[in-house]
Amino acid sequence: MPRFLHAMSGKVPRERTSLLFAGSEWEEVRMDPSRETRPDIQAAFPDMRGVEEASFDAIFTAHSLERLYPHQVMETLGNCLRALKEEGYLVVISADIQEACALIAADGLMDTAYEAPAGPVTPLDILYGYRPALAAGRLEYARRCGFTAKTLMGSMAQSGFGTVWSSRNQKTFSMAAIATRQRRSKAFLVELARQHFG
Image: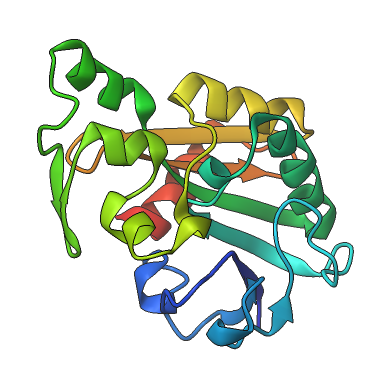
């Protein structure tokens, strides 16, 4: 059975990862720095201590690269690459700060960008972290950097991934990106994206 690393998983259930990873065909291994989340591997970005080299078929992480300082992004992506098998790939969900900044440019810093299960999200939340969570003391959700589609794909390519695909979701001001360890065809990436996101 193929295994995916749910990196910086928090309390997010596998059902909220992707269509493919939510199914029973994949074994989920959870990685998180907090013991409260009961991870299989207690580790964090960027170093990922305890994650063995070439030990996973895929890695999934959502809204975690934004929590890093800019200088830690390449180190993190390099460690993700190290943890993947030759046929492996990385799936990243990230906020789309280009869309957020377009709303800010229209003087909408505090306007509702979209409605999340936790409540309304503003461009300020997208840039710096969801304010109600931060006010409740969950400072691990603070954001220290951000990406456009160009910079996210560029960072993945520069860190050594063979092929990168991305798509923007304007409704949730987010992006999905897939980076394969080896070079793959566009058709392969499109099909892989379809399996994950429909």
